[in-house]
Picture 1: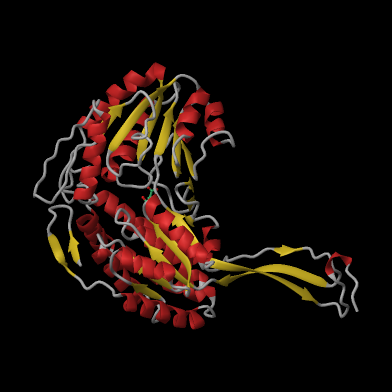
Picture 2: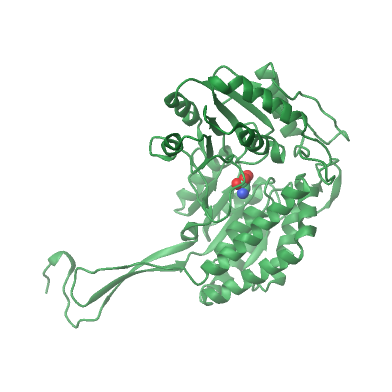
Length: 468
Ligand code: UN1
């Protein structure tokens, strides 16, 4: 397989892809490593993750440069991605002393009940090109402290970043077989998905991919954690601070060239401020510099490949008129795909608007009353991230209420992208329902064991049952 840079479309080198047998061997090695890794005290496992965090700090700019080269992110965002890895390592180190279980009051005298959280087993981690290392770190840092070995299938578009991360985790002292990488395309991922020794498949990618993976893992009673697409929206209410909203929208919709699963794709604006906001956005978009992501002045780098460019082009053809942006392409090489972020004012949520086009295309819709705005907002099949821009406390709270946003992430006066690692990350509906990263997402990587200890010398049975 060939590693490429979307900056020019050129090759960065070729690498051998894993064969099905290589995948099976990696899983077998991981399963063997699990036998000892699971009994290493969690704080000691945390020490490996702490060293990984230290190495990431030491190599932050080099790894970020590789992310920029392979994924086409601008430097600041590539650095942010590595920072996200460092943050989750710190989080996981603390967690390694806090894998708490509850104790419950037993109904039987002289009995104690408690929950223990046990290591789960081998975790297969499948990641996407757009976060070529942070999403691995979300999974790996948690899985490692939880006592699970990780076999990672990175995107075939970003293999070098994966190899660099692997070098760092080995240097951090991960025992043999505890952290591995298998390179390749969908067939490598499928092999991982179908291996019964893989206890958890944590996969980030399209909804189509998740639809294929989920039932296959479920069929063998494996566990899956799916982080799929998004069609994220923001409601802009009449009382919104528009200066703040314009900056937030520009970052969320055009940042990362629209290639985050949290990218803002639908803007639902109150009719009274609609035209004003569109004008301001068009002006802001004019100042977005598109180009080589390694150039400090660039804010929008290339799309990942021709496929992404064509999907963007198809959406533009379908939508017709654009308020801002254009299908202008300053291709610096035949296989590099640079586009100007675009804004399209639409009258209704057509199937096109409800389709996730993984590119910097923002649809803007007008609304008249709050309930209509929420209904438009929640009409998408996906349910990842969401925002409201308002200075009205009641509107903000209604957005966060049970009758508000139906997404896994809901923000007030912040765009839908750029979440911190401390919260659980993931979404509902076609986004797959998984949660990764912070809060108690670690529980997905462990097996809950309910334990009852009788210290009484009698044998009272639960529910008052009498026997023998
Ligand atoms: C993704 O696009 O798959 O919240 C992850 C964000 C980032 C993670 C995005 N922290 O935008």
